[in-house]
Length: 231
Image (cartoon, rainbow, N blue to C red):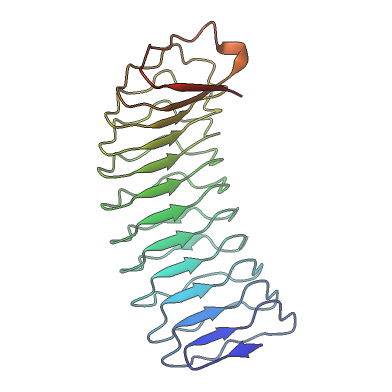
């Protein structure tokens, strides 16, 4: 255990059952603590890492929390509305069904959440990773989203025309039939999308990743400077 006035690390403490509510604590790391079931409300906490806590059932609504890592927590079902949160990493939470609208969120990683059915429309979100969310059927059209990874979302049928998007990774989306003409898109991954027949002519597209077996079935435009990689 390492602690200071503003930073406490309690990771890998196999017999730890309770976290003290230390007012003024700014960073708390309690990852891989198998007996922890609750996190206290800590006034002033800015960063919380409670990943790999198998019996943790909920995250407290801590005002002012900015970074939350709660990945691989199989008992968590909901992420609360944490106003001010900027980064949320909740990947590989197999029971997670709901992420509430979080105003101010910049980065969201919720990949490998197999029962998550919806991504909220979060204005200002810049990076979204929702790969391997098998029940997800749509992606919100968030103006200013810069990076979208939605590969292996097998029920996804379309990608919205997102203004400001720079990187799109939508490989293994078996029901996807088209890529929208996203002005400003620079990098596109669309490997193993069997219903996709055409790549739009997007001036400025620099990198295209596609499948070798589909190369002669996929209509690829002649874009100056485009690099094509076969996967």
